[in-house]
Length: 185
Image (tube, rainbow, N blue to C red; front, side, top):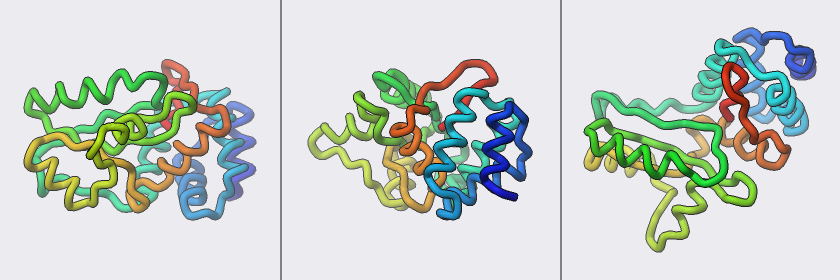
């Protein structure tokens, strides 16, 4: 399998297989696929979309590109709110505390960037004393104790997600499209 063939298939509006998506994401996360090919892939997806199955496969491939944090020893059920990001941080800072206040633990890793507005972490770090660099143990402890935690992405958890999130900001591929045309980066 070759990255360029996957890019061409998506450019030509073909549906990618799970194996192709996993190959591309693992290759990018490991450094075997360079930024310029990942940028071409991101643009092809932005312009042509992904099917719901492709979106699921991409999301799982990104999640499995590094370590998986098992929260079952901390809370019986936990949720995360994930989005493509955008202007204003209108959801994370409102939805997460509301859900946690209803008794459902929320463990969230958030991102940086997003052009002129900055990301959620950029905004939260402007609050004196607010830390976004929690260790795994600090993350788990806070989730267990108060049921809500928001931290920055770590290098070992979903590294492909972090790399693609950063890349899309500098390649003009942030915009998301509705329906089955989502690119969840």
